[in-house]
Length: 120
Image (cartoon, rainbow, N blue to C red; front, side, top):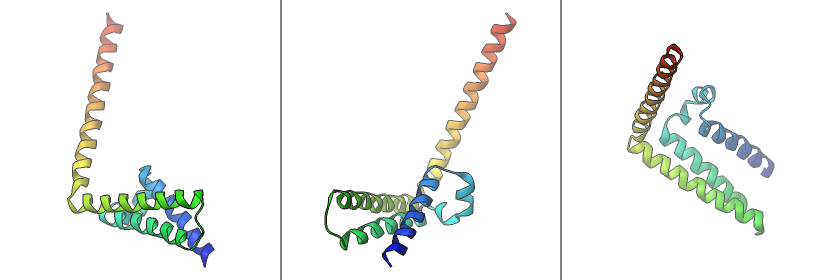
């Protein structure tokens, strides 16, 4: 029973790492991680899973660390739910598009300047 929960916890943690690393293929294959509300509930669930693990063990330094990380995961999950409910994903998407556009303009400007310097 305890090993099964640990195995699921490890798989869930890898899912979190992949989603936060913005691996497009992974995100495309797991649609519930695209939505910030469902992502927040998932993160909070993983945090509660870590807290449950600590409840059945004696306290040592590693268990205290796991408790802290679990609490942080629950907090991040709550933030994702709130941001999803406030539709902040669209704001983030617009900022990302604006940043990419600015980078493309800067690259074009640099290329034009280099071309003028080479032709001079």
